[in-house]
Image (cartoon, rainbow, N blue to C red; front, side, top):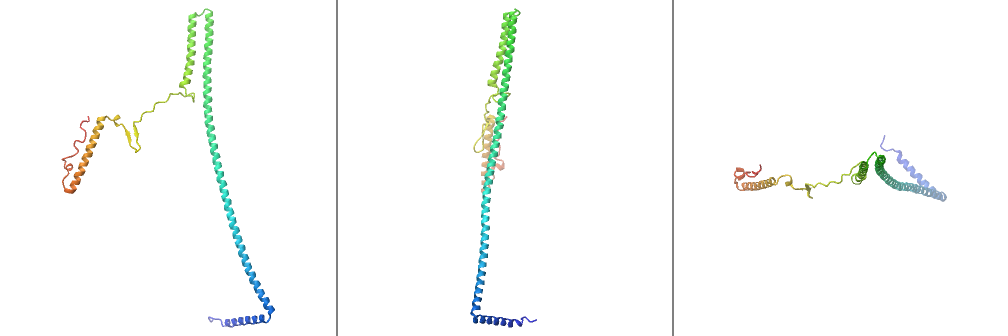
Length: 272
């Protein structure tokens, strides 16, 4: 099979001839030519119009989608704001309820303490009145026995004084204990007063060091001896450093290394 078809050139020539013949026929017939031109113009116009309409419809649809996305974003923003405000309102409401519950709990606890205090106060007052009533009955019995000459006036006066002392002592003890010793908040708690705060033995300064009187713990002669020993040790260390520097420069042997001058005398000899 050859690389080129031998019928292709003849076919192309025939197509060109047909086009030329068709153009000659149109020129020879003006009506057909005008109709053909109008038909082609209308066809091209419709094609352009359809393309533009399709493009406009696509742009309109895309714009509508973009507008919908924008509206949805605004709706999401408004919804997020509503949810945020609602969360804040719920949190504030929960905080208010929690504070209310805590306040009610504290008020209930305090009201219970008040009720308990007044209840026991009334019971103790009732006890004192019972004692007073018993003492009054005893006084009536003493007066009856005195009228019958069973008891002498001196004995009756003595018993009356004893009853009066007992009743007055109970009343004064109750008043003084409730007034000064009993805790004003809880009935069963005793108030011991406030103890004086102990003086601090050490005070921390701003730089973090501790400022304290060491002599209040360790005797002063020992602290003075330790300070002197520390000063002598620092002096010996400084002299040794100078001798080592001289040894490096001149080769002279340090006295501290040879034993001619050492740590002797640094420690205190008066510590017993």
